[in-house]
Image (cartoon, rainbow, N blue to C red; front, side):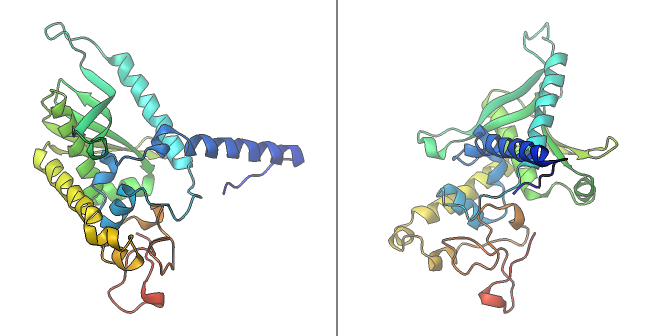
Length: 274
């Protein structure tokens, strides 16, 4: 998967070892091994991807490049250090201003499989703002600046707002901070008032997808291709980042070919990279 080079044979060997170490560490990180669906995934526009995730369905590939995630994790850790160093206790309340990388429960439930929880990047008690950091390419930053954060990121922000509310806080605003991976500092912040209903609607949609998985007719078919074909994709799906994406697939039990075209397509599908 990784492209490696060295100044000589020894250098090439060392490069492969470092690449393998990075891949192994990323693949076996707690975030990568997480089975339960998290707030970052609940707002995914693709019902089929949510269904695959909820069933812990075998992925179609294991060759995803981890470097963007590794860099993003490093940036989150750096921001955690920055705000932890600046955190002070309010003399009146006896509480710190910032809650930094604290785990919140978006939806408690007596069944562990139905709990939605995650680590909130930052909550600012002084302003009631729920913050989420996104490290992106500079062209992607421009896209979000022009078009907004999209449904998935917006939903994630409000889900964490609900999580903070459940933790006893009074969130008033959600904010997504996009920082570009570029040779100069570029920062764009999208923000809007916190809306509990956005989070509740997303959880209701998740439950609707889950109900289809638990339906007797679904289990009777053993989740065959014909059953999966009834679970819709979405034109806004980010197919190339999906672990169940398999271009040209005609069997949805082994992989999804991506967003389907409305017209005739090769093998009955057309794979479009969102």
